[in-house]
Length: 440
Image 1: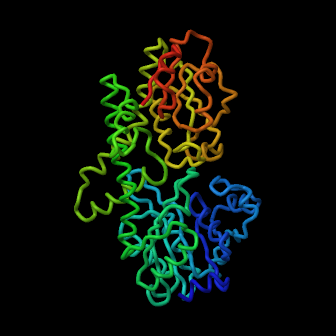
Image 2: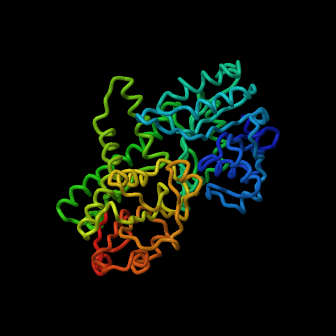
Image 3: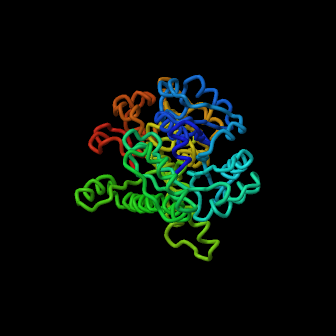
């Protein structure tokens, strides 16, 4: 493992292509181990923030960024200095739910143009089984005029970082590793073992590693879809879903899933990568796609319930002032990618409702760019008719029912509507509030 030794001895460098919620923590982890690390990203404003000691992902933290020795750059030719290159760019889906490989193709072209003999390229971006071999490697070979397996090696190690999660971190999540041959696998495993404290789990080939990633998230998606379907049925039965789940979870083999909005860059996307390749091979998904249909419908379901509750409260929904608390795809995280709160907004728009959105975690720039939403500070919210708590940020949990009430206009409580999407508040609190309420 000459390359591994060279990295340890700082004779060679490691590079990260893509410094987002996944790439930045990885780059930081290797830098802390003393390796020479090059951090590359096409986003000039992001690189400038990192250089100034600001972490826009909030995954590593400003202090750590200020003290890191990562060499941040937007100059792709700097990648020529690295022989172990990790690609961690996003892989979204198109409007028709087919994989959008544009970022990973672009990254492969950049890496290929600057690839030097003896290098190992490891992809972390989520793709369908076979993509690395069928799409990425040919691009690397074409751009570099080098031959994979002879002049350079390739591996796949799916990212498992959970943005915003302070418990399950890069270092304590087992990492899947694979390589095109045994030599590359051994080197890739040794390199990642430097930063993965709980160890790595090698698999036999790239396709298996790719499958692990899309399947683990498809499994979660299906389980949440089941709970969302139950929530819609229980709503008709006038049964509180969270109370049912609380009871179910007293059994040792309960899985602990709850209903909710399923967005983000993984669970709301990865199943489509899996079913896309399956359909190319002649198999039409019977379960996975139906789970996606259920989960993709939940934003509209929540919005429709809000409108019905507004009518129940004697409001004219089109004239009502609706405030949505939360825009990011999950709690305590600034990531707004593929947020299903946008589906709530879009469905309310069909009723002629233009909601006000509050989110202390989200970037004002990202909110406007991705969704055309102008964020409002919670201290500026007054005279609401309906409040939808869509994301369980700690800041929203801390508000309490009485503070929530101050957001409303001065009318009797029975004319105020509170929609608790995440089940933040207890049923007895909601009943005691006197407001018209609903929770998923």
